[in-house]
Length: 384
Image 1 (cartoon, helix red, strand yellow):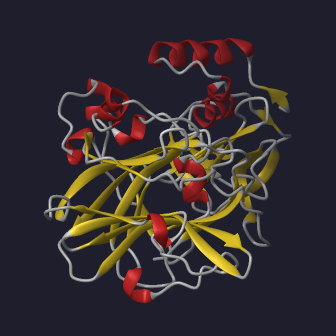
Image 2 (cartoon, helix red, strand yellow):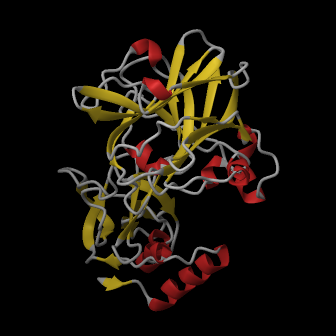
């Protein structure tokens, strides 16, 4: 009975999927069943039981359960249920396939052996798409192999610690303008919190090229060394446990750096000593740096709270564009062409927690597209 599943059943399945609106290539399934093995059955892998009349009908049941890759059929006339459906993505161990008079075991070509889906946390389903399998990703992950984080992932910095960061060495050739956008969530605190920093190398040492640092009563931007550091009165507006949008813009032509909170500009400050940004920088989230090579963090300057949707572009956004960013659901934010959020999350270390699935209302945004408002909240902490 070795065969590719009958054409009319494949067409029927595709018609059902079309009704559901699932017409992507990865949703089209083809199963190649292998030759049946009489008087044997597979144990320890059964995921469902059915009552059918023939082995062919048992194949149909397997076809419609995405995780099914093999079956046991009991030929006894009064057996009920007589069709056992199995998921055998792992190698069949000695003793799993055992003699059983009156049974028929039938496997299929299984492209999920070896788990191509990047992690045991993900589900591989055989018989789908041009690769012969598809990956059903765990929460907060996406991509053909579940190897990328979703745009709505939130990084959680649970406590002040030098162990929590995400690091990227970046190269910004001839950068004379930028816009940085991020969302963060903090409570009132005493001391110092660093949202992010870019560290550059100079003769004889290092320089804080860009850093955003919070104090209890003010915000400080370190820019191209201490000589251009600027403080802005914060009045504790963003230390209320709610989400707030922060944006920075800079242009060498205007020799000014702007900071925006929730779409509103704080007073612009100019300085004629501004110069082009350094080409090679070490970017980190959640830490103030004192070394281009290894960060050399200080515990009392590290961030505590949540950060999401950090993006950076090579142009200056106008005030109305910043205002729109502050009103967009973070999961739908346009991605930066210099730095984008999914790539940043990819480089997080294991000390950071993460979760996803927040709705627009969680960010205080109520006039959003209905589809965004219906997202399901779920936490997906790693390293538990």
